[in-house]
Every structure is written in structure tokens, then in C-alpha cells.
Image 1 (cartoon, one colour):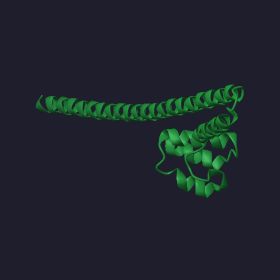
Image 2: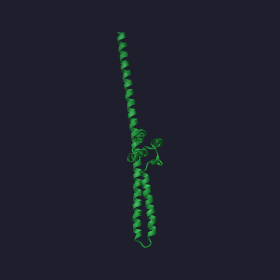
Image 3: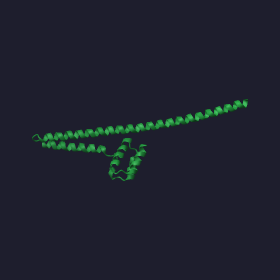
Image 4: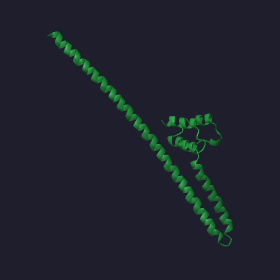
Length: 155
């Protein structure tokens, strides 16, 4: 009888140990999924914040350039306004160039760099900067090696 009770006790302990291990495994899996979800949300929020910032800047530059161009046109109709109109047109061009610069990748002389140089420059960029590189690369040279490295760093 004593052996039977000990044997049942051992079985119960064995089952409890299995359940404990299963619960630990499930807990680890849940923590891993949660950490991945948090990382994904942080990456997405960084990208969205960057998009919002860049879109706001681009829109601001565009509105400013259009306003200055229109003001220059109006000055042309005023006697002696041509000189002032030229200054406004220069400022409008400057704003246009600033708006275009917002769309470029955050790496100096990007278009002159080879794949290895670009990939070496990607370390330390924010998720939004990496996303800008991806969009620019996809629209221009579309180099698979660069796109893979961007995806790896965003991963």
C-alpha cells in the first residue's frame, strides 16, 4: 500500500513538473510575442512620426514657395516692383529646394555610394530614416542588397 501511495505521489509530482515546464514555456512564448509586438509598435510609431514631420515640412515649404511666387507675380504689376519680385523668386526657389531635400535619404551623397558604402551607413539610422532610404532606393536604383539590409535593421 505504501509503495502504491509513493508511486501515485511520484506520478503526481511528475505531472506537476510537466505542467510547470509547459506553463514556463507558454509564459516565455507570451513574453517573446509581447516584446516583438512592442518593438513593431515602436518601429511603426517612429516611421509615422517621421512621415508626419517630413510631410509637414514639405507642405510648409511648398506653401511658402507658392506664396512667394504669387507675391512676386503681383509685384511685377506694381511700378518698380520687379527688383522685389526677383528677391521673392529666389526665396521661393530656396524653399522649393529645401522641400526637395526633405525627401532625400538621410545619407550624404547617397547617389554616389555603392552598395557596401550605403549598407555601412545604415547602422544607427532611426526606423524612419531607414524607411526613407528604402523608399528612395526602391524608386531609384532598387538594389536588392540595400533593401535587404534595411529590412534586416528594421526587423
